[in-house]
Length: 356
Image 1 (cartoon, rainbow, N blue to C red):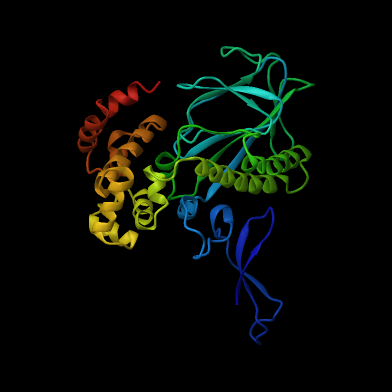
Image 2 (image 1 turned 90 degrees about the horizontal axis):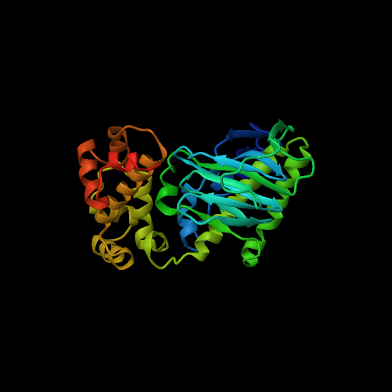
């Protein structure tokens, strides 16, 4: 008999339990693998689960959070963050006080205790004190020291602001998920509604584990952060208009399979027949559904998806154009350049040159 057993703070494993046979005692426990069972190592979604966009994305939403610093700041302080590498999503959890977030292309955003912010495109940004100008620096200087669970960053013996800074990565094979599905900026405010309020308990638990630094604190806080991020994404999807666009496609059985197949394997030379099989529907139904939800046929949607992925790679990596072209499904650099120019009115090289 095979059972699934969860061990809090230590990941999830598939175990084989003896059934009392002569060959294996009833008390025997033999680990079979350390493969995560579902998102963040959680249970695989049951087949009878309600079909919604997050359920459709669940096989790809195996995120790995990395808690980098617990910051405790006072007086004048500023913490710059460079463009994140492709596949990484920076996040900030404000646990006490207030601060300001500056992201290029957005107005300055004031953040308060309980707020959660993610930057799925990894944009360069600046976290600073509420009274610190955008060009300011930390005064006194920031000192970083380990506490056994996380690096502690502080510039004051009497800090008035505390935040947890980290980043998410997706499991191999899901790197295309964030640029395909998520916006550049996600902000959840603690006082918005009850769904956000439910995050407060997890946020506080993560903070307490990191501050107390008891044995196992890093493993426990990381697993709690994983659950927190899935809840953040759920709240985000609930707020979005899921009746159209890519979320609309993911919310319909007739189209979700095709979209997920494209995201998983953008390099595959998909035909309409292939996509219809992936969606378990007819070609006519698939085309009709895509046109209704996004105003274009499946293969036209795939072409746009590939260009969006190429643009994301150009903005977040130093990969060569030929490598990017192959990675997103083009046969040559010139083919990517022609398609990129038709859609964005500039070449990939011109786009990359102007990204700063």
